[in-house]
Image 1 (cartoon, one colour):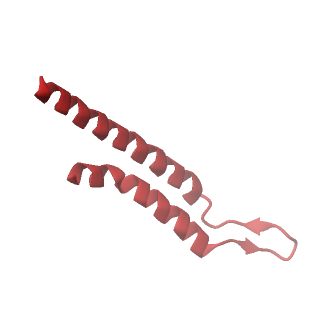
Image 2 (image 1 turned 30 degrees about the vertical axis):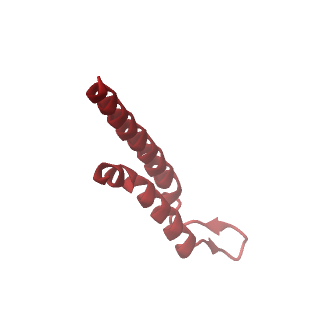
Length: 72
């Protein structure tokens, strides 16, 4: 169970990145342009989501393979 918690940590970090981006927000200048101070958090959250999903799939496949080899 601990291995699934460790593997899902990047997904939680990705959610935190998006929440921080939403809380900090953007700034609109008088001429109508948008200044996004923390735009880097969006692609960073995608990277964390992807790595967390890959880690969870890897851990799940390894645990299934161990159960199959033990059963034989």
